[in-house]
Length: 473
Image (cartoon, rainbow, N blue to C red; front, side):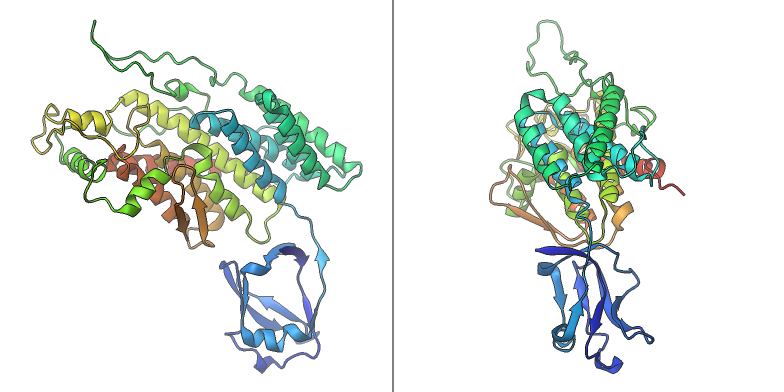
């Protein structure tokens, strides 16, 4: 159980300065080390570090480790004066989880789910920022009466967006909205904030109403007259024509074509996945099989948990988290637009097609396997580039811009596609790299495609951070 406070402590009696050594310290969620120091004039005990402890920081008693010496000499004699703070970040994370659940209930495909999440979080950010005004808006900054509640603005925006997109889930959404509002103190600022949120939500919905998301799937199967081919239509064939959020056009980061089939790169990728991604592989480890199955989880449900994890860091405010989720939403939504534009531009064959036709690629270093199958089911869209890889890399770029590229508090996750499997990471890079490796283990993406996807995602994530939701100087 945690408490929010402005932190300072008075020790009575105060230990002498020499009694506390550098080893006597607290570890706060593994993110920084805080050493005791003293103010010579007022003899107040405080924590000092190169990264100061922010006011209104969130300290979770289960995640703070205080040395035994410090406990004996300090904690038994100090009175902690607590200054109440606002539980600011909860609403954004709660409605992120709610959005993922609503999208899943509606059975949205991954790309469509990314659009939903982006609309929700852009509406939340522009609504909260309309009240607090510390960043440039994505599109809208509406008039907010003095004293408007930013929390009410945020949850009202999320509720209004989801209610418009999924009216069939009204009862559930209204219940969640009521629960969120119950946590916000009553007063004139509450309805004022709600009005701001609903206004912004309506504007964002109009902005995206004709973005092309509802265009029909007009994919034309490649065949010859009278020749049977699979009758299942590929998915998201139209997604590369959507109006982007941050990139100039969907082909802005279109990569170079896949490697020529006569190249050594192709032969290397082909033979690696033929052996490692084979459903009957004798070289893939049990852990690699678990990873492949784990990451059949797709869309926002595959990256939003790590965003929520990092958003719970001590000291973060409502507006900071609204911006974080919005930037991730922008980057990942555009990553899907960019990757499907490239996929259908190149229409490169999947491993199951290539390996069962390995005798016609013109490369003597590849060989056909007539009954080859991948570890996991092959998605219904072209192979190149890797979609999981671009979206996870886009999210990674945003997260590292906010939290750095170093270690993070241990992050643990489960997946509905791999019951009983738990994965753990200590850096955003490790998480993103595992997402990419899973597609090779699964037998559905070549290594080159994963690298290209990661490169595209990094560029899109960095572009979002560079050009959008900037602090007002």
